[in-house]
Length: 142
Image 1 (cartoon, rainbow, N blue to C red):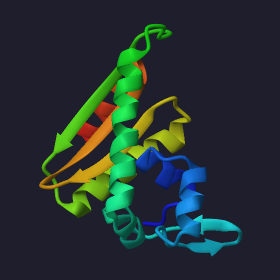
Image 2: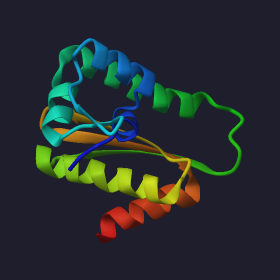
Image 3: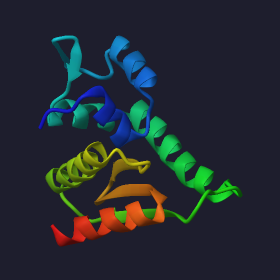
Image 4: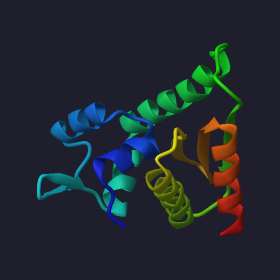
């Protein structure tokens, strides 16, 4: 599958500005096609396997949960769910693609991060109660 810069930002939780800095530092490799960046599964995997990048993703992922827990002024019902799935790298990428596609198609306020760990992959979804529940139902019904 091909990813664009926004997909990589969604998966990692890093901003597109940070990703552009990683491109300049040659930590993120991809191809620019018609003015838009495109990344393969292998390029994404290599990027996310870099120790410096892993730490940045972990910090950002933890910040998503911390921000959710520390916000006393949530508007409406909100959910933060963490899924630790014992899946292969290929299955993890398939799951990440699934959530990216849902978010891109629905224009939702869902925040999504993904991080492969040793022996499992961690996915974090935060957003409105209805959307997170719908996304989780869609995931388990696929």
